[in-house]
Length: 212
Image (cartoon, helix red, strand yellow):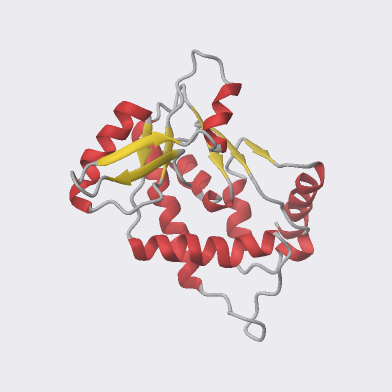
């Protein structure tokens, strides 16, 4: 979802300054690859970049950091990240229920549509930089769970993995999500799906057998 970068704008010169976030999990994960592996990161910055500066910033990040930024419009970013991801997925995956009109906010399909739209933007950026015959794509976390569908539709033979950096709930909890089947089908477009624990993997398999 986010690039492993720090970004700030110099108030005097107006120039953007970037540096690697050495504490970023995704940056540390590349230590598991051989030194011959070329790792390219696709994700958003944690700051807003004006549309007039996006092309220049994109070129700098690719050349200097092997990073490809996704620029989401502010309204879409709010609905995607603070809306669907945090309001629905994070709470559901951590057993913070219920999602129903009588208890807090009801399900807002507009937030789901924003989630899908944001995932499509990420997918388009990935498709710009990969060679589907040779490259491996590793998708991270619940923010991008429908991204595998877009990649698989574009390149049927793409080598695609997904890792969830949060719990995956039991089927009785997961089934309360109105778009449960859409997300399950999207995840199943990955060749490999990883979870933190055996229990989370078992919950996912139970959802596959009981809901699909």
